[in-house]
Length: 199
Image (tube, rainbow, N blue to C red):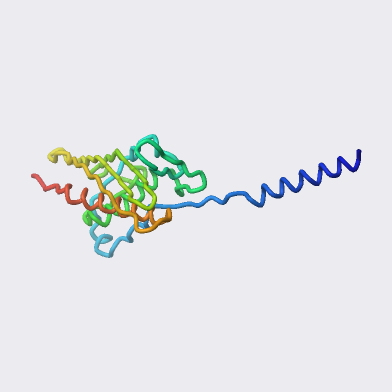
């Protein structure tokens, strides 16, 4: 009986050791790039301020795991390949950095809590489509509105759908394509937002 018990304990230890040794490692990805440092000119002459409200996402991709589109009716959730933070925050940070570059007269923030004064403009952005086809393309479709806080200014509205081909088979290449799509959307937003001073 003791021999049998000892064999069982050893077998269990081996099984547990095997499980520990084959534990899958998580991989993390980010869309964000470092925000540009303010120039001497901007420090001397502070820019206007824009706040990006929380980004809205389709519920299918509003998660930490990456979601691949396999075909029109199938997706795959990758449990071990995740965004470094919830996707809506990844997109917000990427937009803040890119919009700050695309709109040199504005400093863009992801939260009004960072401000000591009222913003000069508020931006709302809704992601209508965020498709990830590995080895094929990254597709991002958005609808946006920028509302200047000056009562004499009307709101600016726009729509963009960007599809960026993926240049490699790996997930890193797919993430790079999504980052390029966000960058192009930022340029299109900047081109569509042209407020004029009205006295």
